[in-house]
Structures are given as C-alpha cells and as structure tokens.
Amino acid sequence: MKKLKKKLIPGVIWITGLSGSGKTTLSKMFYKYLKKNCYNNVKWLDGDKFRKKLKKSFKNEFSLKSRINLGKRYSKYASDYEKKGYLVVVSVIAMAEKIYKLNRKLIKNYHEIFLDVPLKELKKRDPKKIYYNFKIGKIRNVTGLDLKYDKPLYPEKIIKWNKKLSRFDVFKIIKNYFIHRYISKN
Image (cartoon, rainbow, N blue to C red; front, side, top):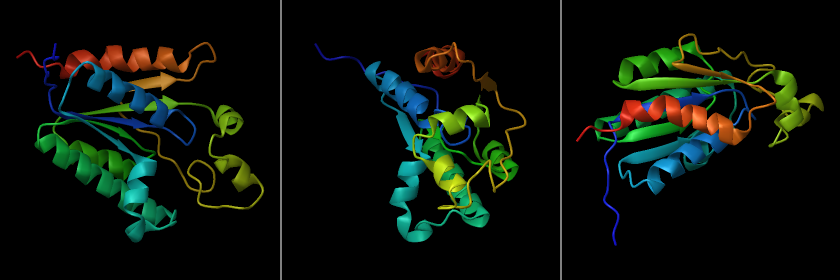
C-alpha cells in the first residue's frame, strides 16, 4: 500500500552553532524523520555540502568576507525554497549577526535553533580535526577561534550542551519544539 504524501507549512529551520556542535547530524536526523513520515515538501541545506557545490565561487576560501558572502547565499537559497512551498532545514555556522538579520528579513517563516556547546567540548569532539589543525598552525580563519562568532541574539530555541543529553535527546527536543509549527492543518 502506497503512503499518502503530507504537506508541511513552508518555512526555514536554521540550525546553527560552532563546528562540531552537531548541526549536520541533527538536521539530517530531522530531515530524514520528515521524509520518513511522507512529508514531500522538505529540503535540507548543509553548509559543508553547499560549499562543495559552490566550490568554483568559494574554493577553499574561509576568510570572514567569504564566509559572510556564503551566508548570504544560504539565506537566498533558503528563502527561494520557502517561496516555492518547502520547509527548509539548514545546518550552517552562519557566524555573523548580519546573516541572522538578513534571514529574518528575507524569510517569512523563520526559526533559529542555536546549539550552544562549550569550546572545551567542541575541541574534544573535533570530528573534522579543525580545532587540532588550528592548534598546530596548519589552518587559520576558524570561527570561534581567530574569527569572531556572533551567537544568535534571538533564537527561537537554545539547546545548551549537557553531557546527559544524547544526540537522540537533542533531536527529540528539536522535533517536539518545531513539528507542530509546521504541520499543515489541511
């Protein structure tokens, strides 16, 4: 028996935090949950994957200016998808307050989730070895270290790191907080 497709209310759920905070993992879990439950108007934009697609424009450029320009592109793509009727799950650092402000201006139904994880914990996790490579001088322009990170000022949800919370617990927090805001009544 074929499952019926369901509709979500268009909008953008912007998951932000520093490298290693769990943005990609959690947004992917949320996206898969929505797809599994037959919501057909959902998109996922991940910062790392998006950067790779735009590699001709951004190459391996990680300067503040490049990151701001890339953040503006994320905002534009997310806004365009929302206007086409999609719920967009975005996972990206988007390190500057001007990006959060742009999102609120461009995106009609916009919600931020800030994954607030202490730097000490991020350095322990370090899945991409960014913090280690910075420490040994191999890389520069790391958000939260030598590049300033503007924490979101008005996120709809702040999830503070707690060693008792698993990624599944954090996923449930995200799902439970946002799902009723996007389920269509039709």
